[in-house]
Amino acid sequence: DMALPFAAGSLYSTVEDMYKWDQALYTDKLLPSDLKQKIFAPGLEHYGFGWVIVTIPKDEPGAGQTAISHGGGINGFNTIEQRLVADHDLIVAFNNTPGANITEMADGIRAILYGQEPKLPKRSLVPELGETVVTRGVDAAIAQYRELKHSSASNDDFSENALNSLGYELLRKDRLADAIAIFKLNTEEYPKSGNVFDSLAEAYAKNGQKQLAIENYRTAVALDPKNQNAADKLKELEK
Image (cartoon, rainbow, N blue to C red):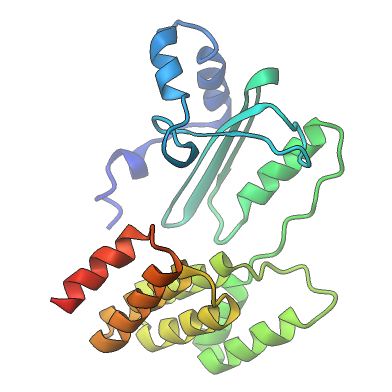
């Protein structure tokens, strides 16, 4: 229900207005300097008050300067904003098409700004594999994934996030068995990622398979002790 997110799902803007907002943050017109220092001070895992603050690595465009950024996503939309503080440059991308990797696009734009050749964003497999699940079944989609992955000409996104996105799309549509199959594939592809086992456990729990959910939450916590969500869910199920 898109009425639930309130401001997060009901805030409208344009890239031009976001640029005006960005430039105003370099002045004291909107916020006093002492408050801005607090907002843009990195805290837990590089996170400030609503912003991710990092130093761009030496092998990336704009190396050495501070990048202040944040992404967002909700049903049907995703966004990214990158503030390049030293040069007062701003990259903003708003998207209303399924599965576009706008973070890679933003990184490509940053490369162009610093006179480098951008890397082509990888193609999302979510729409294509999702269509295969619906028309030919999840086994056919898994076979298609493996075939594409072993194709030397492929420029597709085979990251763990790609499969996870497909799994959650299926989960939201109550195709629980299909979602479980996709999440299981992701655990095979990324056996050292606690996040993928967390997702599989969530699907098992929603499908009423409590013991399998417990086992996979345990694996998620063992692989990533900082995964508080998995730890909390595990405690609930073990009660």
